Length: 93
Image (cartoon, rainbow, N blue to C red):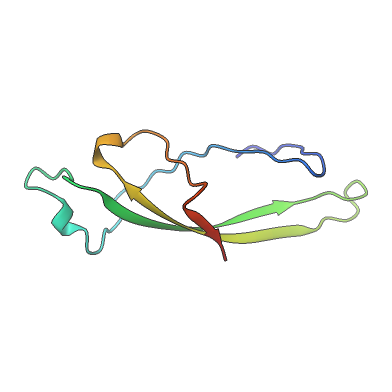
């Protein structure tokens, strides 16, 4: 994500691509057929930390903020490669 300026009391929604390679899917082996492609939905749990930094009084005071987020998403094999909204599936920790 590129750095950006945001005014106080404003909101911004960002779309971020998420890609995984050789991620172990514990307990999801039964979801795959002999062709190696999944034949039904696979539940995925995402946990990440969002960090931000603010400049107050120029660069004199720089408070830092971090928040931990956990999301439960169900990946549909027919809709792979499309964006998935995490708005209703995430909770703050």
